[in-house]
Image (cartoon, rainbow, N blue to C red; front, side, top):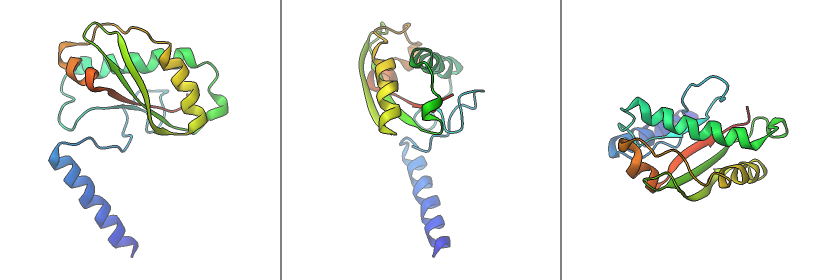
Length: 138
């Protein structure tokens, strides 16, 4: 039975990758200190420009700088969608999922970001739609 579930999961993930949808696995960036599963989400096959990941990591770092002490939420996850315009004005911050209490703290920090640096040209459309970021207490 477990083997069938695992096979079905692999098939579902493969189909998601083939259709170009986002994989919501929290695969992360591998940046030190961010934690397993933390990072940002790019559409499959669209993470070609290194500046895109660097820009998104700067947003994550700015949120962490505003959160303060993260120890009470150790091991929790919060996934946010952050949308901004071409100039970097934050249009929307929305919780996509994760621990409710940790997300409340992260939302307060993210909502205090009124402007971001203007995004790289390749990331403008993606940022207007909403960049998905995972935050795990550092």
